[in-house]
Every structure is written in structure tokens, then in C-alpha cells.
Length: 223
Image (cartoon, rainbow, N blue to C red; front, side):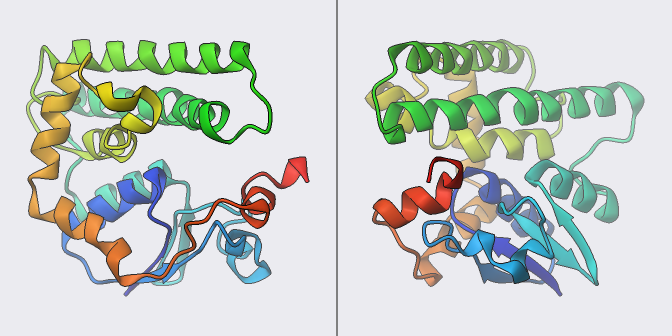
């Protein structure tokens, strides 16, 4: 059985969705990042980078959400196209989310909500970068049903991980400026696998208070 090191935040949610879509047995191993459990020596044997998600599959450790998506999709032969054109598109859009939307969203959230001082330049830079990536994704989804083309796959799951929390960056407007992205996220939300992935947090007792301990755990370089 797969051990799935999990916290209900955007990157682990991508993997939760794929695991539920694949309907493979897995055991959730909670990692409370607000308490700093990601820095424990035992967990760092699985992920030396001290971040969730990570999995251990029959003794094989894989970390980083997009590495896990690729590993599982290739192992099970699902949600990643084989035809060259579609596979090329799937990998390209998967990596755009990995290197663009995901890190810039994380930085936008940090400077909008968690930075200890107000830095207008940083807020503007990362917000504008997130907006640009959503414009690119929205344009693509205005042309095709899914990021890879006609079939739902791991690139869409990767986008879902962050896009379902877009209101944390854009406020009440959410994804209103990106209707094609919103269309895809609504479709994914309606899938039974998404409902099961979202419900994983209901079985866990995770810290929610953002206090000094949490700041030290999430931003140890500032301690």
C-alpha cells in the first residue's frame, strides 16, 4: 500500500486527487506543517527537502508533487497521453503549472498574507505574475477541453490543486476573470474523486492557528 505524506494544502491536494482517481490503496500519513513535522528527521529520510507531498510505494520514495503525478500516471498507464502530440502538450502544461503557476502562487500568498512587513513591490510582482499565468491557462482552455487537449489528465489535476484556492489570492473575485479555468475547476470539483480528495482533511486533526510556531515551521530561514 502506498504511504501518502499529506497536508491539505495545494501541492498535496494534486496528488490526493490522482490517487483517488486511480482508486489505488493508499494510507494517509499526516504531516502537520504548521507544527513543523516536515522537518522531522524521520520524514526527511523520505523527502530531504522537508516538504509535502511525498509517497513511498513498495519501498520507492518519490517527492515533489509533479514528480509524484508523473510517477503514478506512468506506472498505472492512466491520465497521461501516449501519442506524441498529446503527450508533448500534457508535459508542457504540467511543467507550466510546476514552474510558473505553483511557485508564483505560493509567493503571492506569502507576501499578501504572511510577510511580517508590507512590501508593495513584492505584492505587485507576484500578483501580476499569477495573473499572467492564469491568462495563459485561460486562453488554452478556451481552445481545448483539457490542458493536454481532449482528455483529462495530470496537468489538469496540477492546475486544480492551486486554482481551487484562487480566492486566497484574488479575493471574492476568485477566478471570475478566467472563465475557462473556472469551467475546468468546476468540472473537476464535480468528480467523485475530487470530493474524496477534499474530504481527506475531515479525518485529520491539523493545527490551523497561524502563530509564532507556525511561522518558524514554514519560514525557518527567517527565524
